[in-house]
Length: 352
Ligand code: ASP
Image 1 (tube, protein in one colour):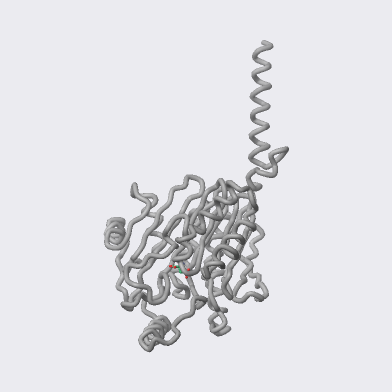
Image 2 (image 1 turned 60 degrees about the vertical axis):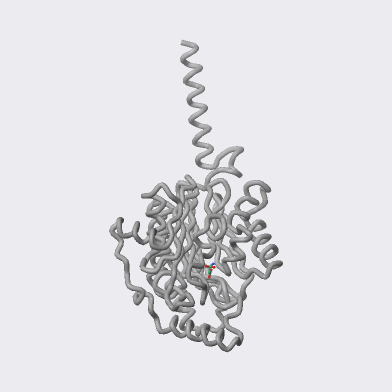
């Protein structure tokens, strides 16, 4: 009888301890998971110089980001998974035609877009990535399918598009990605190159999109989708689909999506470097992100920025360019938009 009572007491103690850990009570509170109602989603719409953009264009981008973040918020508020919220948010930005991603992708020097994307689950470290796509309207969705329906992490070019077809995804004509605005950008860059005059400066506007999210179960996810850099060589792949360079998520450390000239992000494994500093050096997310973006990258003249999120809901959004548009939402349903210039006053809109 006495043994049975001892056993019951032991079970009760274990149950109490696991509740305390789950809800962040007691001595382990500092390192515990966020409270069950806590969630965060941060999106970026590219780092670069927005000063040449008209106020109307900036407003259009702000509105598109707010709409995208509303989609992600709706999922997280209903206890949905961060992975779903990341994909849904990015899809809206890809469809908007206002960013260097999906419909609005920049053109290669051959005058057609080639898109890259990646998505990563911080709980399992599962990931999917795609590159050099020419006929896919939503690269982030294909990346998700690579993660879930193949034994691989990355598929590129024709192989990726064949796989898309096998999954019932329609291959679209490159004309779907045509816009007068992008065509003009392409022609200007081409003629500047031919005349050997200054083309796009390194800090020229980028419009890659990326999202990091933390759901109510405490799981992180990250995703990035891009048309890459203006006038890139056909076949060039940037950092966005490279895990650890432009995209990374791990519940043990953080989730990151980067934007900027991808070659620097690849050479410096920017996303992984930030997360591993958090994990092994035990520095704060803010310090890790700042050290990598504002010191390491700056020393190499690597332009860009990141959005980073840790399992406690801390957010860091450093950028070394003139601007980096971001939108952040938490459980209070207030979307804070900022970053179209260094001194931009944040705008707050509702996520509902
Ligand atoms: N990082 C992207 C790339 O190099 C471009 C960008 O963020 O604007 O492909």
